Length: 345
Image 1: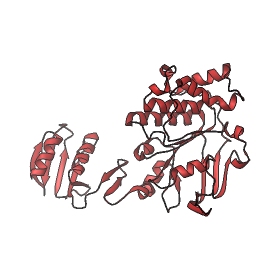
Image 2 (image 1 turned 135 degrees about the vertical axis):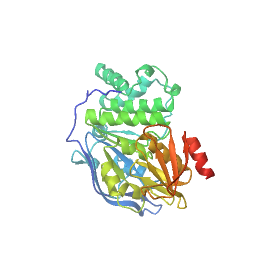
Image 3 (image 1 turned 45 degrees about the horizontal axis):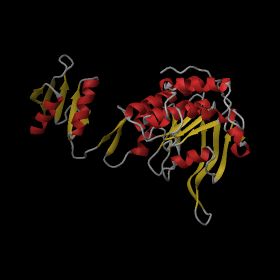
Image 4 (image 1 turned 90 degrees about the vertical axis):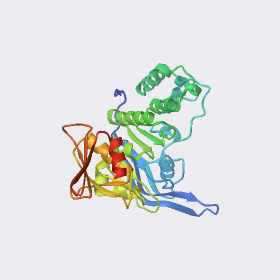
């Protein structure tokens, strides 16, 4: 899906937080801090992913950054101006927000919903003029739902509805877009489609886009920058590759029995009593052989003297030679038969 750059870039309009503390006030008005001393910045032209376990404070951080929840300490600014000094009308031209909750607006068309994004520009009565209609149609086209413009929102799938909400944010024409788990209710293809769209929008329009999500592996593929948040830990930020290679990424998410594989960028179940197997061969076939073996109680090893060795034939795809203690055991002609024979050995 191609995104045309109709919006001016705003390299000087940056959202920053300095020495920020987030949390809540208890019933007695005593602050309960979740995170303190945070210095963060949303960079124009980048898609930033906010990642962390449940209870890490992701939604609290987002709600604090957009001013929906008071900060406990520190400052949040946009374009160098503290948000506490920005009027509501001015703010609505700087930041658009898409929250997690399902939209309950079903009695209007997609075009009417997206048109609500023009409210900062239409004055008190909310009357759309020619320019506003052009912006609405452009936003609808950008997210690929032009064929749905006349449909009622209640008739849309979850994925289509979320695209409509993103189009509404685009119609608002703000340099900053913040989304709290925008793909929470979507199936995998729709999640990928929405995240790819957001990445294109950030790159081609110069917008700063922040989204929170639990989709770790998609974040590694699509994020320009990742913010890692966990309870009781200092936030870590950086480009995905630096976070993976430094070990910081896996340190936030690994648990007993769950390991992060740096080579594949994915998580796998660790079996401490698994049999060791050395896999020779390269490419996608060897990767899927390893995936099947791990699932069935084997641990890939770089040691060629491991008890088991599986040769993935490059000359004869789909043929797997299996050795145990250097002695050939059998040849399998499918991964299914490979697993069956190994289990019987």
